[in-house]
Structure formats: structure tokens, C-alpha cells
Amino acid sequence: MFGFEDMLHSEFTELPFKIMFYVIIFLFGICIGSFLNVVILRLPAGESILGIGGTKEDKEKASHCMTCGAKIRPIDLIPVFSWLMLRGKCHSCGQKISPRYPIVEALNGLLYVLTFYVLDINVKSIITCVLMSFLIVIGFIDWDTKDIYISMLVVILVLAVPLHLFYSREYEDVTLKSRIIGAFIISVPFFLIGEISRPIIRRKFEEDFRAIELGDSLMMFAAGAFLGTQAVIVSTFIGVIAAAVGGIIVKAVTKDSKFAFGPFLAIGIAIGSLWGPQIAQWYLNIPERLSGN
Ligand SMILES: [Zn+2]
Image (tube, rainbow, N blue to C red; front, side, top):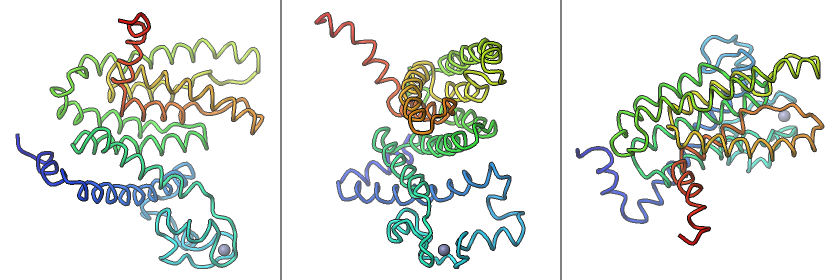
């Protein structure tokens, strides 16, 4: 089959073309990242995202500085670069602009570049880039609100379909069986741990929450279908380690022992989608290497 990939490969074998390609991917990624900021901010607030609906007042407010009311100029809207040029401050009153905006934009751009670099220039990379953007949105919204949007998990689940149709033959480790088992292998134990922890937590803290929330379990269901068994196990392993390290830092900084698990699972899934099978192989081969094979 001579298609999209062959075309790109023949065009981009030379280094200058490759560099240009990655620069374009990065710039595209930070522009999408700018839109992700809007989604992260407005979705939990119940505001309109594409400017559809929403009152005229809302739109007026969105185009002005929240503090001094100065109009936001077109030059202030360039992802990452505007924030750097303004040194993180409003051009008129000097009110600080959250560094989170350029961070989300740069993160999305870098993840796009990394995805194409690791998975090569193909359809799988495009689908994985979409996954990356959804992971950013899910992670940040969960961090802010401790809520995971089921609709976003459904998108990840649906993304697994074209991924499977395009790549089931090339990546033989990710069979349909592997995706089905992958969907259940983490989500079911997560659900059970959540259910078991509930009465214990209620008795001890007199609060109604689970050690692992239902959203985390459903997130690993969607991720399992996307990644297959091997990579979803790797993702969970990394997610749990990240949460343990992150939890210690969060507790030290905010003195709050409750924090969202979702952002850390998102980190695990992102790493699993890029290097899942390789990390699994490396880990399983440790005994052989230690015994001097
Ligand atoms: Zn201002």
C-alpha cells in the first residue's frame, strides 16, 4: 500500500526537511494547546468553548484583562511566545498571567514532537497526538476539580478503533484480545480497591470517597483498549510511582493529603503509549541480565 506514510518518508528523509517538519508540528501543537487552555478553564465552569452560546458579556470579558479591563491585543494571543514577551504580565497593569497557560501550550507542542519522533511519521502518531491532548485536558481538569469527564474517556475508547484497524497487523503484540483484556485488567482491580476502601475511609475519616475513584477506573478501561494489555500495565506502574512521588510533594507543599490520581495516571498513559512494550520487555529481561544470561 503506497499511501500517506510512504509519501512523507520519501520527502522527509533529509535532515533539513525533518527539522522543518518538527518545527511545524511544534507550532501546530502549541496552537492546539492554546485551545486546550480554553477547554480546561471553561468546561468545568459550564461556559461555552467554541463561542457558541455564552452571553455577549462573557465574550467581552474574555477579550479583556480581568484586572484592569485593558483590551487583549492580537499580539498577546500567540501561544507561549506572547507570555514570554510579556514576561507573564498584563501589558497594561502588570497583573501576573498564570504560567500554566504557556506550560499547557508548550507541553502539548513538545508531546506532539516527541510522539512523531518516537513513533515515526505515520497515522498511529496522529492518533496518539490526539490522545496526548485529551490526557492533558483530563489531567488538568482532574487536578483542578477532582473530576474526570466520562465523555473524554469515550473519545479515547473510540480512538482505539482506527488505531486497531490501521495497526493490528504491524504491531502484533496489540491484538484485539490484548485490547479487550487491557480494558479490564487494571480497571477491574481499581474498581474493587475503590469499593473496598470506601467503608474503611468512611469509618476512619467520616467522609464519603474512595482510595481510587470510579473515574480513575474508567480512565484505565479506555487506556487499556487504546494501549493493549502490556502497555496499560506499564502505564499503571508508572502512574502509581508518579502519584506516590507527587503525593509526597503535594502533601509537603499544600498540607493536603487528598489529591487527584488522574493527572498521574495521564502521565503513565502518555509514557505507556510511546514506550509501553519496550519498557515491559526491559523490565521482564532484568532477571536474565542479572544472571548474566
Ligand atoms: Zn491588566
